[in-house]
Image 1 (cartoon, rainbow, N blue to C red):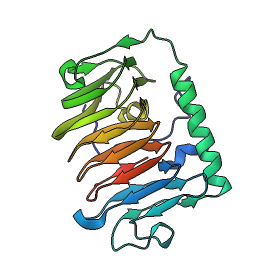
Image 2: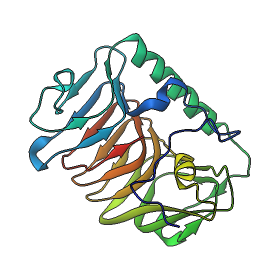
Image 3: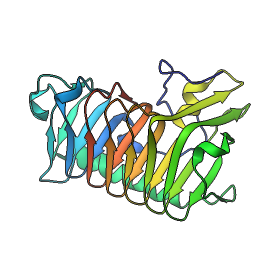
Image 4: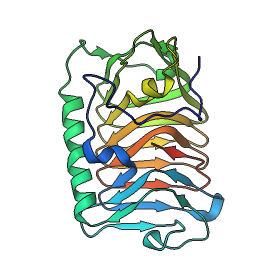
Length: 239
């Protein structure tokens, strides 16, 4: 079966040996300085908590007053700006990033070509010395694995193509939400999701994460050490 936008599970407790996000598990978006949405191109939807920490941090461009009181830009979860709750979530997210980078089994596989050229990838650890790109479709094939884990690590950037990039998960067990929850992208600098990208997975970036118009991460999170920005009309970022 193919993963679809109506299947997303953040319940990692049933997945033995997986990476723990701690209190960050309820967050869909988190930045250390800024979370912003440009309202020009239409509504952006975030399903899950939003956090900005440490102080001073800013959240703008969304309907809730805590995030600017804009005309559109929906957040369904709690909003934590420069408070102990967001600080703890940030700490837990950074601990998870350290655990991901410290995972060495199975043996990491070095990649260098555009991710779309690989077609299908089984659970594993995949590394790029510098930048990574995605053009076309990348399928993550869990097979019968009940606790699949994919870790993608880039030395610098991750960039997806405009109007031509998507990530899918397939499995044979019926646990697509669990499979989707096991996809992690650890980005050395910034992640740029091009227009109308259909992305999947938990993004942890050392600097910025940018969602261009129409780009979405329909089952995953966006955690950045600097900022997370939405250009507008970003249909869903969902825990």
